[in-house]
Length: 171
Length: 154
Image (cartoon, rainbow over all chains, first blue to last red; front, side, top):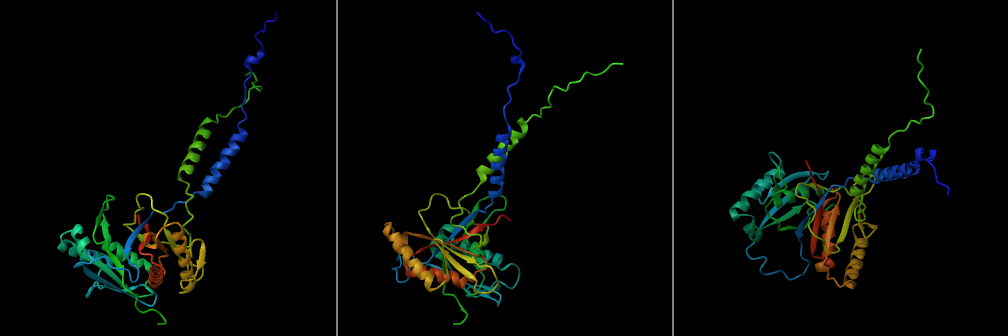
């Protein structure tokens, strides 16, 4: 009987071919790096715009006070004047911070955000050419605020609607 | 004199294990963060920023997304509406598309007033154009609207 002796094979190393794997791995890496795209988080603001001629919810509109925010634009579409009812808020400081403070005091007068949800609504009346980011800033100012060191949002008024745009070019 | 023996037969082997470990970790990182959900987002829409913009919680039923994108070039009238992959001007062509969308949702058994309309408008778009879109949607009996903004981290 032939007995396999201790041959020198035992000392030979089995070598794995790493090159194809590393090729593929680097290709995958390059693919994911190229397609990597940091997308900013997005969020929504609800606005209340019932269809034209739709029956109004009777319970909804009982004694709801409408705060009118008027925003005028200059020729370039930037904010020229911001008014809450008759008070001009764009004369000193940040107009949106002023708006936020005014709305905050209105909400506190109404008894807090929960009460304000039933009692107050905000109507935006904007110039046609006003740049849209001004509207979002104003909506942010009336909707609430977020604490600097946390994600907690203090809500103010979320009943928001739009009046017809003013000063449409060519009209 | 003592002479060092030659070891020419021995191969110099680099240890590849740490490199492969790191490479796989990088691949895993990019795989987890890769975002293919750009079907309803257009790079020409630079959303206005808001500190209160937070992603909605929970699943939404299929909304109707209308985008107002800034077209390349300068000028006041270079905004186009993007709906269902079509680029149209804000006006009669858009009204036709909205009518078609209303019928589409009707075939799916959904009333227009149940459908959420999400408006993704460029930050420089004239507000009047956004309001015109809302009015056109109202004429097609859409009632629920959301204005989209991006999160302002600053």
